[in-house]
Amino acid sequence: MDQIEEIKAKIDLVQFISGYMPLQKAGRNFKAPCPFHTEKTPSFIVSPERQIWHCFGCQKGGDVFRFLMEYDRMDFGEALRLLAKKTGVVLKSYQPSEDEAQKEKLYQINHLAMEFFHYLLLNHQAAKPALEYILSRGISKDSLKLFKIGYSPHLWDGLQQYLVGKKGYRSPDLEAAGLIIPTSRVSSPASRSQYYDRFRHRLMFPLIDHRGNVRGFAGRVLDPLAKEAKYVNTPETLVYHKSELLYPLDLTKEEIKKENQAVVVEGELDAISSFQIGIKNVVAIKGSALTEAQVKLLKRFTDNLVLALDADIAGDQAVRRGIEIADKEGLNIRVLELEKYKDPDEAAQKEPKYYRDCLKKAVPYYDFLIDSSFKRNAGETPEGKRKIGEELIPPLSRIENEIVKDHYLRKLADKLGVSEEAIGIQIKKYLANQNLVKPALAPEKTNRSREEILEEYLLALCFQSGKIRALSVEENRNLFQLPGYRKMIDLLNPFFEKKFSSAEFAAVLPLELTDLFNNIYLVDLGKNNERIEDEDWLDKEIGQTLQQMKILKIKKDLVSVSEEIKKMEKEDRSGSSDWKEAENRFKNLSEQLASIKEEKSV
Image (cartoon, rainbow, N blue to C red):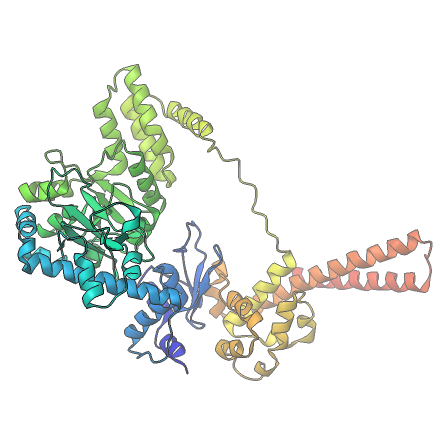
């Protein structure tokens, strides 16, 4: 057994995936809505016996490694190291790919840069003004240590002296991490060197992902009157993507799970100040708009968000788009209003109790939206009602849950003093103008024939139950039309005389049949999931499915023979021996069909 198989053998896939998302028992398998695409009907299936998963919606699937790579957007090497550590397997011979090795190097460089900046802030005389400034902002020394806040020296090559001069890293690698900039891009006093440090004379906030990897930095200017940008952030790199990160989720994820709620703020100081006054279930989103990646990440830890953003939540279109994404993912969204203060940082520093009280009074987002619009517009006048309708109908019409949507449309109609029909008409007009009116959905077409569906269903019944004896009967085997299924059934011969083992059977399958077998093993039997353990029902269901397959095959043969007879009659061959033989076959097939239908009706 190699080390990859050793790791897989030590992990129960159902238990592992259940740590990320709830799974529901479905016969011998488990199912859930797919975490990789939006769906209303669960099509994500996990097999405890095969230790595999597959989504029949987006077609993604695999083992525990593939799940972790898809769910946490890891390379194989990252997943391997994480699972090896989890299972206690000491890796010996794994060689990472060039891309994986580069990512690991960037993490190491960023980690050393974080330690360098952090040491300077707490220990170096040159950082004294920065330390005094951040302490004056109400950030405690304990917080400086916990959040690893640092200081970048007022030098063009301070970081390079450490990472290149002392630690031996190459300048191009520092550039790849976003820590230094080639001097050729701009004219600078550092023109004697090929590179200059991106972060100089700034407070440094390391941007760490929920797994503890240092992905980048946010550098805050010390002088609030300085003309340069207030924040300089790491650019997009191989390991840093602004739209995916939540600060400081590595420290707050457990509290978010415990409280089943995340308080979403805009900046690092908002998050740290909130944390200091006991609001530890907090994350900052590096801007005012939630992205789809951030929403999906938050959903791993909670279904409830409280937005405490600096931006105009009611009017900012980017904020609204983020909220619509969160609503589509099924998250409950509330809004915290800090009317006395400009942001959570100021509220936490000046009046912590007020901040905490406001948090308890946070209102559902769409209630906030309606109340905000009525505060700004005169709801008693026709003009005011028009403005309110124009503001509220677009976001309310896009609410994903129809029950929730109906509730707020009724509330809007009541507050405006108009009929629900009037609101409905305006929504239809809005959707028509946005080209969002969807035609009535036609029944979903499938490229699969009835025969293919029945073949898959029969194999799913047999393989998932382990009762494969029906497939040993030659007559039954001949009913299968798909070449892949026929090849698979031919390989079953050694398994008819012993208890069926899916693992043993999978081991003898050629590579081109493995995915086909796995997918059959994960087919969701719907309402029959729980009945597969009932042997009487199972025998009857297998028999009835075989019966339907026979009927379809006979009907198909009848059509073929009928066309053959018609062709001979057109060629004036009626009464020939071939014609008589075809007539006899047609008669025999008709009698077989009548006999089967008679059996079916009894």
